[in-house]
Length: 348
Image (cartoon, rainbow, N blue to C red; front, side):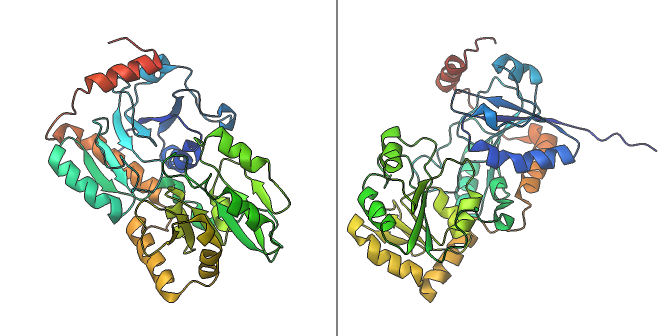
């Protein structure tokens, strides 16, 4: 007897270039399972040159609607409800401390969380709202992290490798306050410094560092970060989501005024404390190493490279049981109007 296996159509809704690292492991899982994937770019902040020839990119919002996806994966916090398909939030970062991370905006049917730190609060919110479900899957972006080779950048050097990765948010970023200290570190013979800015970082901050590039300090223009995380011995940051990713490799992070500093961080309050913090990071105590490991387990306990597979399976389960939801999503009239205006789509 021949059994017909149902296949599904999936849409990737993206608005930033960092989405490629997040969604490509999921794309492989979907295609290996015999399903179809198309991409839709919202806005003008995605570098379309990063698409590869084999990837199907829909030309406009009308094509995205006509694609009639069964599910839409979103590494952001909004997606138009007029595009067909159940909406799946896969998140754009691990950092849950930033304002709005647990804000429910009424867009999503499924939240694919990364670990207990986010699963527990979202499950509490699911009980309250009753129109979405939560499944702990891990983060697809991290599937290749543990096997990625370090960036091929002065890997024969015996200098300490520092990755400076500040966030873009004006109220949280350390980019401006730490400029002089980072520059001073680059003048010392014992350090190699690479700088990775968030895609939304203010241009004046980027240009400030570009102006002082040297043999020991370089601003990375590459889109990916896994190679950088493997390369670095120590990271300097603030409240960036990249801190969580680095912690999963059991490496120490120095932060300037982290919004919720924990004992897994070496948090400083003033830029001139950076030198002393580096000494602590170079020889982390047993307590610090234990705290980093505990934080990583709570944040993202998966290192098996199967998070994308879990996301796909959670979505397939949702598609089979979507009609069993206790409540429908809210109408979201104002947000929906703004999305229609943003995308120029007015059909009902």
